[in-house]
Length: 269
Image (tube, rainbow, N blue to C red):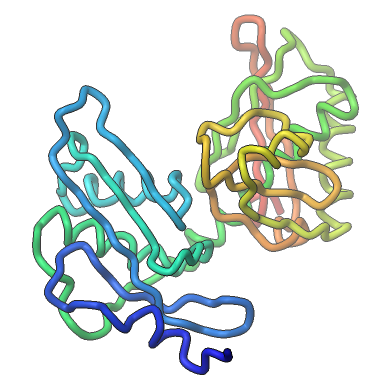
């Protein structure tokens, strides 16, 4: 039987007086639908409060909680947090963040979300910086791994200052740096698709991940098509060409490791 109004199906039993619920538009294929985000924030009796989410990446929920604590002053550190998207819909678009944040704040304050539209502004310049920088570390790391068998020990992603990779070697030659940078830019110019998708705990073992995911469910993988697979909840550009360029700035020795400082996007051009 055809469902002509899927939004009505999801919203049929919704009450406007319940704290912790917000309605957002979402794309399912090419069709926009309205879905309800449900959140429950409750004081925890545990040393480590519970954090569970269904339909939203747990990393995104943690980031939104941190923003609400830092920017809005909602102290959620000692709270159990549960987030669910009604109807089994999975939210992947960044625009959903406002609805999730509102649902969390509504439950924490025990006040229903006011009726009517809510407005938020996306900092376009900041979002672009993050979209350009997020794919850069896995891209450069995979270049060092394939060329010289050097796997990144840790990485730090920045939008306004150089990002860094720590390599498990006390020294890296200028020739190695130049070759890794050259390969990274070749892949940027190739404009490889960057895809983000969720996989089950069983399916994740079939992917050539460089590191294991930190979560056991709702595992989000970002793939630079045919080149790198990384579990990540960040905002990425749709293709490597969006990075524009990657430039290694300098290196420094950190005990028995080498820290590589680099920039991507407009800052590297």
